[in-house]
Length: 416
Ligand SMILES: *Cc1c(COP(=O)(O)O)cnc(C)c1O
Figure 1 (cartoon, rainbow, N blue to C red):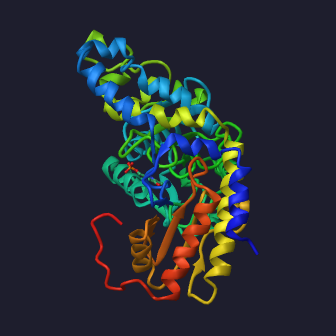
Figure 2 (cartoon, rainbow, N blue to C red):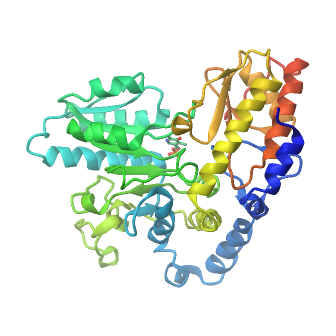
């Protein structure tokens, strides 16, 4: 049986423990929601002050050159690339995940339309349980194109092989499911898609900075992801898009804004895409927000994804063990896979009053979140979550459940 002292011992031997000091976490809070909004790197406050006070305040428009504002999407993309198995010149940090997915889908459709044997394919396959915006973007693009494209929703990973038939144009999947924490086998599913003649797009929203990803080893075609979750970029921080070198020459997307132009300041009346990853850009970026992404990446550069993964699995294993032993007898159901290979960096449990229990946890300073139906979601971020945090969070959960200290009529805010 694990004790709180065992947890303290594990913290004392944790090679990542010192990194917690680089984050500002309020006293009395155990933050288990870094999968939704990462905690703030301490450095982000000074960086924001510098961008606003000095770069904007003093240098004004000169900062596009002198402070490197214009190059930031590419520079940050190159710094993010090693975390996802991408190479230099293949990633830009820009726009939102929804928008980048739209570009990747359009590029994938174009790629297929150019192919002599695949130009008639009209089906985009994804999962019904995918994060809704991914499905909505695919539906929006398909219906707007008005060329017979449809979105096919599969109900389980076992249904994917059969769905990959002669009409399949694109397989678009989220690597780690936002609700269950289930992690797909990216290499195997990409291989299946390719064998069926489909293009594979991966959404790394719950993977980048959370689990090791090797896009090149998996031979993926396109990828997108968030920086405000596990990468700690800040609320609404710009997302990223990956286009491997082998697809860059053929890459075309309909949001052909001036930042994707070969000579943006020539102010020519016709669009001509720039070479390389720059063609995934659209227009002017939210500079202040973009600049803060670097503070999160700075922390990742002090460690590696193997160390992060080892601690993530230890934290999630411990959480599962403690909830199942300390809270035995309560109607909790583990939704997240026990199999390490299929687990992301979160743990989800169902409870018939999941929303009310989560509200009570948050009231006590244990911040997770709630997703329909009945799912309490706990994110584990090895950069700033300790083993003692896991113990303490479970003890508070146990107390709430043992004493029925939750209000089943708890009011819901606009954001759960
Ligand atoms: C968080 C998340 C998004 C968010 O998209 P936005 O455009 O930033 O709102 C998209 N897809 C998945 C799978 C996510 O988990």
